[in-house]
Image (cartoon, rainbow, N blue to C red; front, side, top):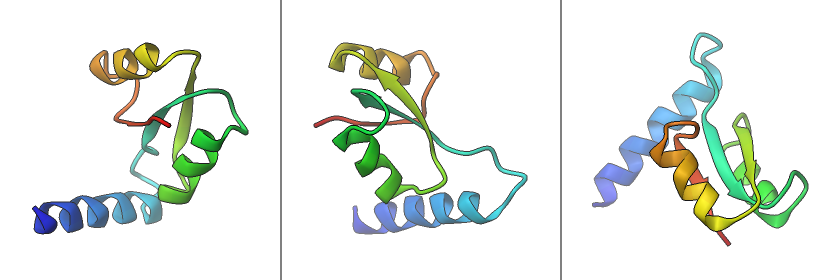
Length: 73
């Protein structure tokens, strides 16, 4: 399992450095400036944040492919 995590981290770091790769979209529960927003930026500084009012909307954003990842408090 640890190897999988490291492989994922390498992909994220590669996309941060490659201008040809679109930024990772991360759905958050809350609005810009919230703790979830800050957490997403700490994990993936180049991400695009998709703010959601409710946790259910965060999961729906990932399921509907509007975001590739999520941060939930």
